[in-house]
Length: 313
Image (tube, rainbow, N blue to C red):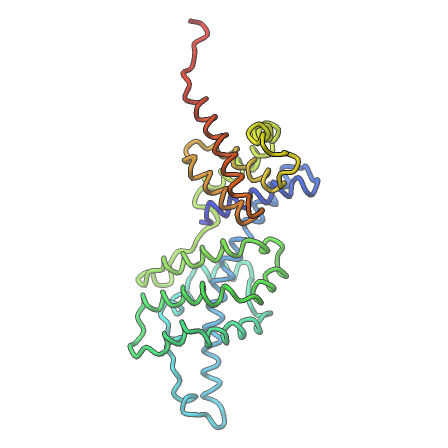
């Protein structure tokens, strides 16, 4: 399933868009919210498919070398450790990935130059060369580990990759970092004995996650006046009108989660939105939001712990 943090980010983004676009149709925005989540799931598969495409390109390069009119010794006897990588061999035949690719028709066929460029960058990397220099045969755990490192340290930082993603979908502008973390998590979770049936992440873990998104989004909008009044109350030392609008939106969503999802530890909720603020708002937003939310949660927890008075007694 997509991480709860990414789901929270999606809600924050759509609440922000709700105000900024002036479109006050909650049902319409909710539909767009779930579409954006589906696009994140698509990006997750597109990154996994990129690894397959890089592997395929590496194979073609070796075949091209062997078929030269005047092949060198290196062309005839290439180092095949990368194309023999046991994790990549397993990913290539993954049923879930192949089914998703076929269903949505996603591919890198229109961006062969990007695949080539990334492969060449990989060839120059220390991680790749250290791996290729090992004399021992392919080992599944080591093969999996090196692909995770290559994806995180070599592939993910390639700027051209993000230019392509931005062209393909407006939903992929800011979330690649979150999806990359899920791809790395997926790579590390693979088991050799799972063969072609290794499970990939689904959009939602279960209906609870889907309900979480829907309820959090709607409550953040329906209770906006009440939540903003709380923010005003506990930001007395700040000019509320000068507080970054994104900060207000993040706190508005955070307060809704604190109120509506009591089964989630308050510290977990606070930490999540503080981290989101660091990524999506100003440098000082994390500290500011932490202070305001701490005060709100402290007062809320005090009120809930008060004994209920029976008015009839």
